[in-house]
Amino acid sequence: MILGYSTLFAADAVEHALADADSARKLLLQRRPDLVPRIEAVVARITHGAGDSRHANAALLGLARLGLRHGGFGDDPHDYHNEDHVMELAERRLGRVLDGQGDDILPTNDALALLLFAACHDLRQREARDVPGPVGGNEAASIAETFRILDVCGFQRGPDRDQYVALELMIAGSTFDPRPLPHPEGEAMASVAGGSLARGLGLWLDGERPQWAADAATRRGERLGRLASDLDTANVGEPFPLLAQSALRLCRERERRAGRSLGDAASGPACLGFLSRGQLNYFFELHRFCSREGDRVFGPTKLANGEAVRRVSAALLGRFEGRVPASGQAVLDAFEALCADDVG
Image (cartoon, rainbow, N blue to C red):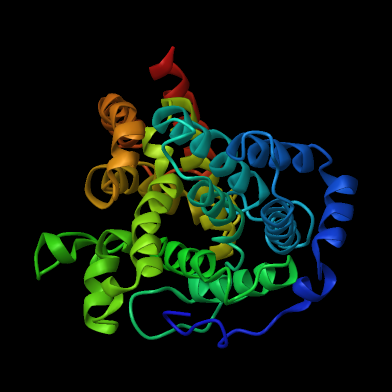
């Protein structure tokens, strides 16, 4: 549509195995029968009970493919980017936005687009191919697959262009760059060099697509991209036990992808760095809310979490001061105990 990624990444074996919503429902009813009614309940809330079969089917297809490719239904399980991450965005975080904004303030099609973002933004996690510019290869590939999901679920690229454009920009904007700030070109370019691309997506579009703001669908997509990014990174603004659990899941996934066993000594320093200085960097330096809505809904809890993040990070470093952790699991266990003590 706008960025041109939809033709760059072909369907893989998972797409062929789950070709449509019926096959997705069949898999989910076999492996996680709770997920179908939960997604349908989110759709029912957004539509005030009217339902929307196209959006429900697309969300279920995206969720099932992620679960088969990277989650609990296949042979490459990821601890964070899986079907449960879809649900924490679709139910808990989008639900908080709906609670905070009111069901009548966030337009129905916008809320449905955010649901599809939750289901589809992490479809691909192991793409070796990159694309030009700041958008990640995983995100570009996820955009291409999302377009095919919309196609097979009854959306049309002409009449439903707004949803295609919105999903394209929302997923692109979810690219997260872990490089430290500040960017040498200043605060306006911060998200291009660190954190979520959504914060600088409009600025990047100014250079790549100078006429983008003249198109209402693209303006909507950029706006929703900022809110979608806040949903994706709203762990900072959830109760501290949930924030701690997300850090543990990300750490486990990171070590798995690096090929390090948590029981080995080699994983110890990496886990210690990630769960101490890495959390401080993410929470205080890289993360910024991208939308007014996200800041309003999740900002107060983030503010309340700040001191706990500092305390636990300092305590974890103190626990291993002067010695190398025996293993990554030893660090995870210590972090979990410290978080529990801090809350208690």
